[in-house]
Every structure is written in C-alpha cells, then in structure tokens.
Image (cartoon, rainbow, N blue to C red; front, side, top):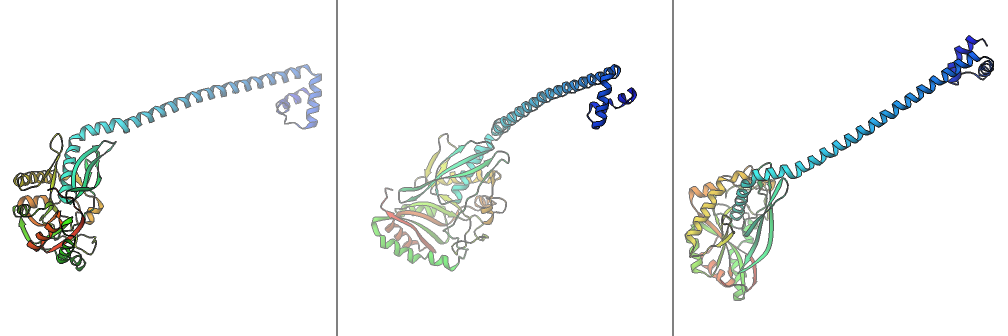
Length: 372
C-alpha cells in the first residue's frame, strides 16, 4: 500500500473498522514506514487526549449533578419541614387566637342548643384543642328518681376555618303537641291507662321516668305548681316553638317525630368562671325562667355559629338548626305542652290520675332512689 492510502485509512484502522486483509497490509506498511507510523502515533495520542477530556468533562458533570441533587434534596426537605410546621402548628395557633372568642361563644351556643332541644341532663362542658378543629365536649346523662345514670360524652366539632360548630345529633321526641295527630302505633304505645297500670303494679318500692303529653297548652307557672302538689322532679318541659306541625322527612317508630324546644329540669350555666348546674324548684322558678330566657336570647343571636348536619336536615332543619324557634318563644311566651318527670311510681300515678294527660309513657322503672 502507498503512504497516501495508508494515511487515508488510519482512522478506520484505529477504530478497527478495516477488514482483516487491509489490517495486515496496514500493519506491514507501518513496520516499514517511519513517517506513517509517526502519523499513526499522533492519531493515537489525539484519541487518548479526547477520551481523557471527555472523561474529565463527564466527571465534572457528575460532580455538579451530585451537588445539585444535594441542594434540591436539602431545599425540598427544608420546604417540607417548614410547610409541616406552618400548617400543623403556626397557622392553627394563629387561627385559634383569631377564633378563640368565637370558640367560647360557640361552646355556650351548643350548650344552650343541646339542653333546649334534648331531654338528656347536661352536667358539664369542655374544649379539646386540636389543629384545625376543636372539639366541644358535653357531659350528659339521665335521671331516674334521684339517681344519675348513663353517663356519656357527646362531641361537637368546631371548624376553625369555617367558624362553625356542627350541631349534628338525632332526637326522638316522646312528648307530642296538642295540634299534632300521631299515627296509631304511637297512640297504642303511649296509652295513658296502660301507663297507669304499669305504675300501679310497681307501687311504692320503685321510681319511674315518665313522658306526659297535655291536652292543652298551659303556662310555665302552672307547670311549676305541680312541683308543690306532687313529690316529683321535672326533668324537662316541652314548650311551643312554632315548628310542632312540621313533619320530618324520616319517620321512626310509627310516630310523627319532630324537633322540639324545652326547658331543662336543671340548666348548665357556663357564663360563670366555674360552671354551675342549677335545678328548677318552686323556690327559684322566677329566677330560673329569667335565666332560661336570657340563654334563649343568646342562642337566637349567635345561632349563626351552629351548622346543621345531614341528620338534622332530614328532620326539617334545612339551613339553620334553630330556625326561628327561639325567636318564636321570645315573641309569644312560654307555652308548655308536655313534661318529662321522675319520682316515686305511686306519686306519678296520682299525678296522671289528676291531670289526665293526652298521652303517657313509662320510659323506665327502677328500684327506690329518692331523696327529694
């Protein structure tokens, strides 16, 4: 091969792209020609330099990439940590400070809402601080005679963002307004004569808890007089609130159930530094009524803090869990249409025999617990 031919195919030779026969001829020529061999060595050195340069560049790129990855990871970690602290500590703390007064107001509103719409006795309340939701706790139970039973805690969620407390709980009313005509199944269950037979059979050695539905509306004062005449305790007075004729969308136990307002037999006052529970009696009936009306005014003013849940919507409270009920009572006065009482079974028998209620239902009978 000529020198020009060899030098022309040296790149292919170095890259091992030549055929075996060409390779042998090139090698034979290189052994005999110093000039071509020198050219060959130059090409080899240039290739090495290029390879080393590429490796150096690759090494530098890998080094920069590692540093960049470390920075990205560090930035991401710091961002996530700051975000966690921000959303789980700082923002909730700021929101809590902003909403603290509303939270305390909502606590009072839900306390009033519960004790005016539930026949359960309310003995206390507390707040459990969380992140974006604070839990308002109510401590409730039932009286049978002078014994307090069925201790329970009911939680209501206060949303710091929405500034609302969920007023969700289900009520089954056992006292019926005179203008409401219940279904036959209810009339059979709440037959007055059957209730009297149960009470008479149990006699003097037991106490009972009984629901009484009056034939007509009577005054608060007339109801309190029953405390003077009979050895009983009034657990709740059901009072007309303007919504008695509103049937709910979901009916239970064959009766026309509805949500009702009532005066609790004992009222929890959370306006004091140390919460107080005040029980209705003949000596404090005037002051008790005044306190009840004050709380009713408060509830009517701050009902916007109460959010109605799905169950209450099914009960007829589409938007507002209180609607205009509190205002109706304030405008029209207290008109009682039924009471829940407890006391000695024979004493409640005499009460029923005297007032001849429209409906009577013996809710529970127990052994003697009575020290009124």
